[in-house]
Image 1 (cartoon, one colour):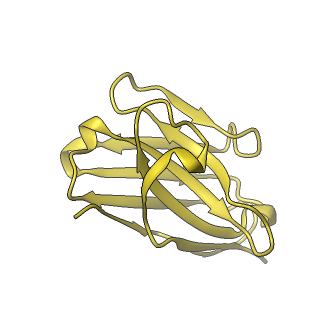
Image 2 (tube, rainbow, N blue to C red):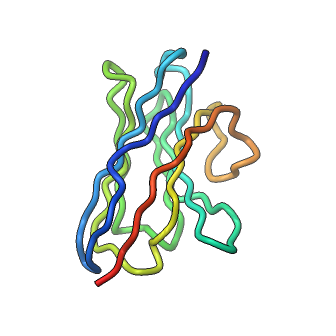
Length: 123
């Protein structure tokens, strides 16, 4: 059974940082792309970042480019999303998802999803 569990969300002030973790079980991370997505109330789910399973390729949405980084530790079956210089508009529920290489930021390409972790950026 494939499971993805996000952690690390919380309340942070504008300009602050958070690191989200996505712990994957039931599959070997070596063969799966991982995407991070977010959804704010009343808005569609938005692709934030992607990491390829094999060639190290990463992709970021324009809204987070230069502020967020993504990394993966295949030995721990965990992917991290480091979020710096957070803004109030980054407030959302953040989800990680597992898919195949080339899924990039299209949520419809992802097969397995976590339950999400809330990130709130507010003073």
